[in-house]
Image (cartoon, rainbow, N blue to C red; front, side):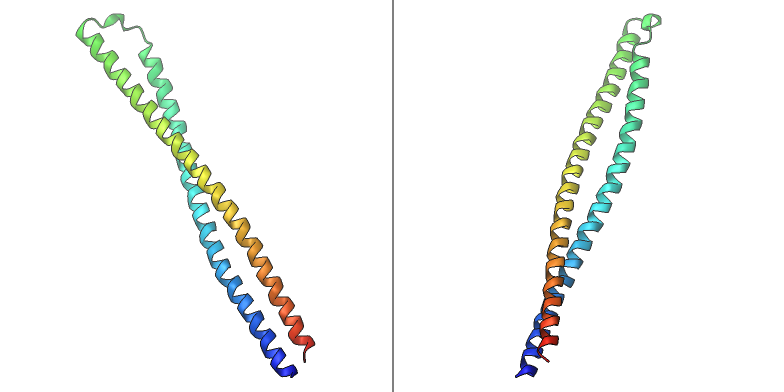
Amino acid sequence: MGSKEVKYYRGCARTCRNHSKALRSNRQVAIDKKEKLETAKSKITSKLSQVSSQKSTLSNLNNVNTGEFSGARQTKYQGKMSSALQKLSTYKTTENQNVTTINNKIAELESKITSLTSQINSWDQQALMYDRMAAGSM
């Protein structure tokens, strides 16, 4: 009878390890996604810094005394500067929203990784328990 029990417990341990292995694979996929998002976030943050600098420079240029310009030239200059500043503002707003979305996704992935790690530990502990039961049944 001990032989059947040993075989049964070893089968249970193998099943637990298979579940653990599948979860490890899923966890690695989540870790890889998180790393890609963190890289993208870093690039976007760097671009946002550059855009802020450009916007500041354009604002300074826009505030320069345009007294040397008159009529249509002044209107055209102010229109182009306003348009450029508006485009930079829109771009910055969009990219800030993208950073927020990325942060939310990273938080979601961190939660998933934590959950998967907990499940992996549970399956590993169950496998060890079945190994001990198999050893005790010999």
